[in-house]
Image (tube, rainbow, N blue to C red; front, side):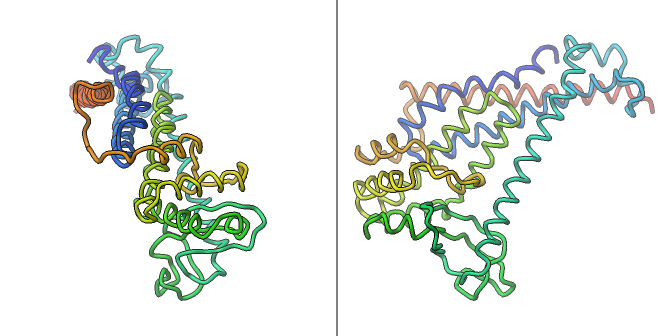
Length: 326
């Protein structure tokens, strides 16, 4: 196993180039799916690496419940620098688990609170709140809706998400811009962008080297919704005006939101992209281009990380099985 057990911890660095280039050269839909898949696989591999190293470190602690054979020299020799790295992996893995649990709990808590706040309204697809604070977001399915609208089930539980917008924001938009706003938020719901954003948030918690991918997916998910809104409305310029005007009206209104509830992204870049030509629908870039090389490099890094973690896991299982007395 040797030093290869540590490769999944650093191989996420191979995805940094594609995190930036995918924003610029890939269709937002393709970039979102690609970057999310890379982040999830790399995060799982690095977590497996920490768990394997932690086994060696835990076996060295006095009073641990593991079999005595797991602290044999043959087992400890499978991990280089086992005395330091093995024990350091224990708090590292505990921190990863705690951070992921905290993120999931916060995600669920904010979603429940948002649905509870809307429970007294009729269960329509769009909820307009009489609020002087301008904001809008797409609330994913779940929770309980009041009323008997098309989105409410027999038990009052929503089967689909809702678009939430305040009167203050609607008053600052023209009719065409309102249509663009609703189309944008419906695109978030239809594609379940909240799942992509939650996945990359958890990946970034598991390995800090994946934070650039989290930032990139937050942007590409917004661009995906922008392009869908432009397709529905039929005017990219109208969507660009809606985004710019909404940003000016809201002026960065702070909102405690969950992943995918409201992630506006860099507004100037989004507006500039909408004022330019529509992105092409190619699912895989040519190999001999900057983005193509970055994609292949990230794919190779992910494959090596997966093979390294799988090989280390199998090797560790075989060693521990041999060291465990019958």
